[in-house]
Amino acid sequence: MQSPYLCPMFSTTQKIGVLGGGQLGKMLCLAAAEWDLKTYVLDTSPDYPAGQVCTGFTAGNFNSYDDVLAFGRDMDILTIEIEHVNTDALLELERLGKRVYPSPASLNIIKDKGLQKLFYRENDIPTARFELFDSEKALKEAVRTGKWSLPLVQKTRSEGYDGKGVAIIRTLEDMASKLLPGACLAEELAPIRTEIAVVAARNPSGEVTVFPPVEMDFHPEANLVEFLLCPARISPLVAAEAETLAEHVIRTLDVCGLLAVEMFLTTDGHLLVNEVAPRPHNSGHHTIDSARTSQFQQHLRAICDLPLGSTEQKIPAAVMLNLLGEPGHKGPVHYEGVEECLALDGVHIHLYGKALTSPFRKMGHVTITGETTDEALKKAQIVKNTLKALSLKV
Ligand SMILES: Nc1ncnc2c1ncn2[C@@H]1O[C@H](COP(=O)(O)OP(=O)(O)O)[C@@H](O)[C@H]1O
Ligand SMILES: [Mg+2]
Image (cartoon, rainbow, N blue to C red):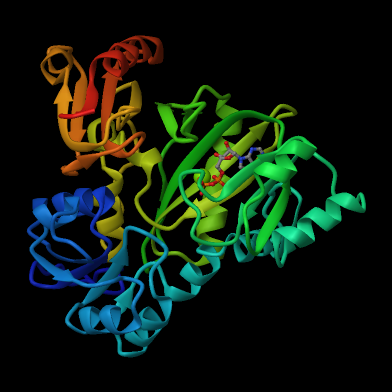
């Protein structure tokens, strides 16, 4: 029977190059090892999480044209675990016949939040109203003249992550103290009822799957997701709408591999696309322990043009908790409370292998599975109070 896939050969000798050696790269390499796929990682230090589990490691800077090109020449497929990479080198590698997923063209749109928002506007994808500014001074001027009123959300166009490029400006004092420097965009502050994310996957043959929507509950101080719930506590109708929207976004952006689509469900029941990430995502970590296919295996299936796996949960409820470096602790890490947490049924601990901890650094995550969300949440609260990433010396 002829395979319907564009690249039908499954080969354990093909080399998959991953730009970035953090925890996402590590979990991708671990999933690849299940099928004996060979992974090669480019990052500055082999001591980072992925360096400990990949087939081969190359020391270099994923922002450097020369480093990415030299690394990629040896690979069959290239992918990323972070979007801030040198896309000119990836374009050249694509010209040389390498399979690059996500494509450098879609990466160029996504890594600039301004271009991302313009893309949504041009393609009728619902998103919060916005305007681009060359500098924070221009935004200040727009507020002064009344073109924009407070509250608003300011976002830097590039290099932002984990809330670092986002400022919520509510008052004139915030304007004076919180505005971030440089080219930016202003966005209307959305009346958020729930923040959700849908991880979609697409292979070059055009097959698309979506994981069930997850609900993201944020840490008030760190601006990082603290608890993530799957399924999200939203109506089946809204869930279906979110899945359809995520499928539309991945097809329109022409992304192969994973695309995590972050959305706001507003108080009046509308969905707005906030931002996307074309790679494995924090909001898909629970899938390792709770779904028929993990997001990492799904990404590999997608970039190797293999059939995509089932995205169904194999257990009714999952809660994911980011294990963040304890405030006040900085230095070589040690973990407290692992034994107590492992004694609880349904608790799955993942430690990334970062040698040093610092306040709110992502050191690992824990997925708690259960028969109901309430039951899993109760255990998650115990894990949160028990499991700590501390330094030896405070
Ligand atoms: N337009 C908005 N209205 C209300 N809250 C927002 C808006 N944009 C961002 N936020 C809040 O800030 C968080 C981080 O913004 P986001 O654009 O996702 O940046 P990051 O790349 O740091 O994740 C969001 O998850 C949300 O809680
Ligand atoms: Mg975000």
